[in-house]
Image 1 (cartoon, rainbow, N blue to C red):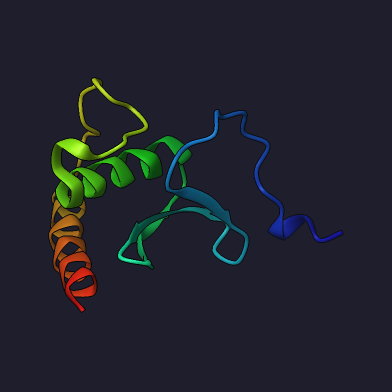
Image 2 (tube, helix red, strand yellow):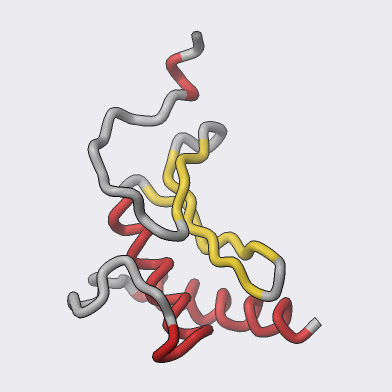
Length: 98
């Protein structure tokens, strides 16, 4: 068994929109839109990945979004995170409209 590709021993509840990516050894956030998956990014922390998913889901679905952390304040985002979400929003809209 190759330990380099195993999921870290982190006890988390099942979070929507994230999964462990063995190749990158990070948590990947993905959003499903119009029959396609859009990768939102790779993160060291599963909670951060889930919060990024929540932000992107809210951008796409508005008040109908099903969130991981409904009612909690949004993740503290860096300017790079905000820039990434703006790019992600464009990508999601482009893929949804195809």
